[in-house]
Amino acid sequence: MSLAIRRLAVIGVGLIGGSLARALRAGGLVEEIVGCGRGRANLDEAVALGVIDRYTHDIGDAVRDADMVFLAVPLGAMREAFDAMRATLPPDALITDGGSAKGSVVADCRSAAPELLGRFVPGHPIAGNERNGVAASLADLYRDRRVILTPLPENDAAAVARVRAMWQACGAHVMEMSVQHHDEVLAATSHLPHMLAFGLVDMLARMKENDEIFLYAAGGFRDFTRIASSNPVMWRDICIANREALSPMLAAFAEEMSELARSIGEADADHLLTIFERAKAARDRYVDGLK
Amino acid sequence: MSLAIRRLAVIGVGLIGGSLARALRAGGLVEEIVGCGRGRANLDEAVALGVIDRYTHDIGDAVRDADMVFLAVPLGAMREAFDAMRATLPPDALITDGGSAKGSVVADCRSAAPELLGRFVPGHPIAGNERNGVAASLADLYRDRRVILTPLPENDAAAVARVRAMWQACGAHVMEMSVQHHDEVLAATSHLPHMLAFGLVDMLARMKENDEIFLYAAGGFRDFTRIASSNPVMWRDICIANREALSPMLAAFAEEMSELARSIGEADADHLLTIFERAKAARDRYVDGLK
View 1: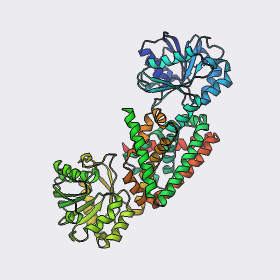
View 2: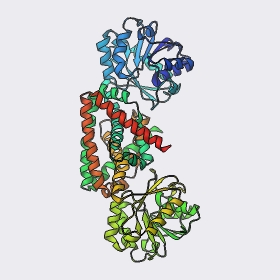
View 3: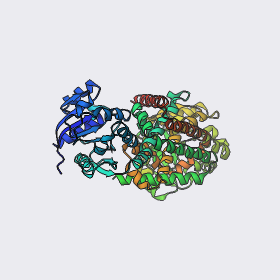
């Protein structure tokens, strides 16, 4: 199977969408790239940088004559995007996305454009940083990163294989899992940590003399709270999109922290050491696994 | 006032104690440095590296003829250290320490050696990393870092000034606050984040298929959980030493996370955005303040 893409439509030309465009272009795998978004300045910059060839503000126009569509809009805008492409999407075109939660995007497609489900292969590249916009995009953002695909019963094998090949061409390691499992894994490894970082910084910011408190924060605090500098609107959308997995997990964590507070209050040395040793062993194993 | 130290006794020659020794030696501010500890290999290495001139395993011997004593032992070993130096500490010698909680160290001195309180100026250098042992020590570990002193009513001004001058000679910015305020500030900015990192990694490690879960953790997870690779025994001691400040703060945080879980479950978009925006603003302000 040849990967060659005749016309790629990138809906949302930011860090995620722009980096896919750059990677495919760098690999010579795409003939034409059409960008679509709202902000004119960002899209002009995308053209100037050579990330896209041209752009439109209309999703229906963007997908006309495309054979691959990449949806990289905020989770809160997915439903509208599916709806907007119904009339003009060519019958042989595939759709994939970069959303951080998958259940909500699948539900959006099912409700807005159920006839597109067979050609929509949901995906999630595990990459990114705190930066936004096409200026932050990189041709090698996905190199050696994981991309999770969550194929649907409606997808045929050729569609999944084509989306997989596209990500592999960007240097990514592609794996597959169910929509539900994806959403639980990401709630645990990404969404929950973001809630703790946002919550901690917010609690400190509301303390008396909060500017003084931050003065004494050491290097570890900077690393620990880095993710609290992430985009608030994006994270509001992620929380709501993945609320079924995230809400009970955060509630369970809160209960565990409440128990840990009791153990500390009671100076339960053995219990504290057990938790800290188990965590350190798991964290060291995880970091070793990255090498 | 001349800072020159005739004989410095470093009780606990690890990252913290070794770095103070290196900094004072590099500045030509100390004539002789005597190390004290349990592990022979680490102390031999300290001599080989020139961090200390000689060592003993006996605290009473180490402080004999010293004019400055730096206590860098774990919080759980402070009380015994005060007791062990009572008989031989010269009357003009000062004591300071590097403990991450101050109330417990002051209480240890008060109960083990109340006659030393006037010469004990409690301190806490806000520096360090996940590494241990003298091999990790650095002459510039304290450069441009903050050192908090928590002088006691029993201290005379000359004693506090001499300890302050010692840290300034290492390039540190020295500030003073009460013991209680120190313990609250550090509970918020250091001890609480460590509990969340240890707790999160521990919870994930206890999930089904936990090794698979860690596979999908992205870069943010690595930064967020770095402090969960810290020394479990040290953190057990810190939790217990600072339990009066830390336990209620962790309980309050747990309650807030429980409320956040409810807000997510109810898709309360406005409330989520308020928290995330406030946190991002505070975190960005904090990072700007570091520049």
